[in-house]
Length: 365
Image 1 (cartoon, rainbow, N blue to C red):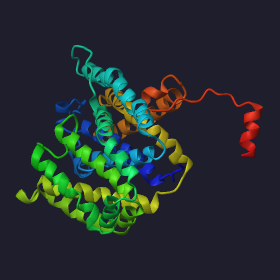
Image 2 (cartoon, rainbow, N blue to C red):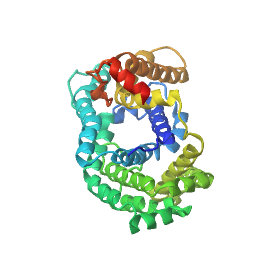
Image 3 (cartoon, rainbow, N blue to C red):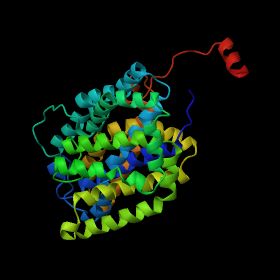
Image 4 (cartoon, rainbow, N blue to C red):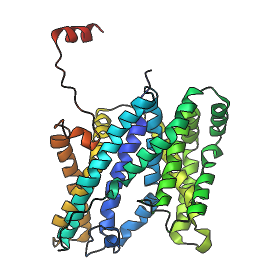
C-alpha cells in the first residue's frame, strides 16, 4: 500500500533534534551542569535559561508524539514480524551500540576535562530515548494492529468526531495530569531514565499514533486553532516563569506542554508539508546526528571553554563546532561506510549493480 509522505512530520523531527542540540549546549553554561553529567563553563549564561525553560516542557514529548506517528506510517506496509525486525534494526541496534560505544565516549571526555581517573562506564546516556521507544513498540503494537484491522470501527469514528473540536486534542491532557498525580515527579522536565519520562513518553507515543489514525480531522483542527493553542501555552508559560506560587504547578505544565505541541503541529501542517532536497538530506542526517552529538558537543566544550573570550562567544562557538562536525562526521563517515550505517540508524545501501536489462526496465516503467 502506497502512503502519502507527511513532510511536515519529517520537518518537525529535524527541528526538534536541532533544538535538542542547542538545549544541551545551553546546559553547559548553567551553574548546575556538572550535577547532571555535563561539562560546565566557569562563566555562566543564566539568561539563556528562560527560553530553554519554555522549550524544555515540550521538546521531548514532541519527539515521542512524532515517533508514535512514525509507527503508524511504518505499519501501513508491514505486518507484525516485518515491523519488529525493522524497529529492531533501526532502534534497538543503535541503542545497544550506543550503550556500549557512544555514551561511554562522552563520559570519558568528561573525566579527561576534570582530570578524573579514566574509566569505562556503559551507559544509555542521551540514548535512553531509543530504549523507551523500543519498549513502546513492543507494548503497543498488538493494540495498534488491532486498531489497524478495525479501521472503520466505532472507536475510530468516535475519535475522529472528538478530534474535530478544538478541545478534542487538549482533552488528552487529562491523562498526562493523571500521570503527574500518580508518579509525582520532582520536576516535570526530568525525563531521562525516570519513570516519569517513561510514562509521559508512553502517553505521547500512544496519542501520536491515535492522532494520525484519526485521519485528516486532527490536522485540520490543529491547523485551524494553532494560534489559540500557542496563546494558551504562552499564558501558562508566563505564569510558570513568574512563579505565582501554587498557581504554577505540574498540572498546568502538562496543559502548557501539549498546547505548545499542538500549536507546532498546526504550524507544521500549514507551512511545512512540502518536499525539498534540504529536507530529504536533513531527515536522513537527523538520527545519526542525534546519536553522536553529545560526543561532538563535549569535544567542542573541551576545546572552546578554556579560551579567553566572552562566554556568549563560547556558546556560539560550541554551537557552530557541534553542528559542523556532526554533519562532517555524518557526511564523510557514517553515510558512506556501509558497515557503520545500521549502527547509527541508517539503512544499508544496496550493493546491487544495475544491469542493462534492469536499467531498460526502469526506463520503460
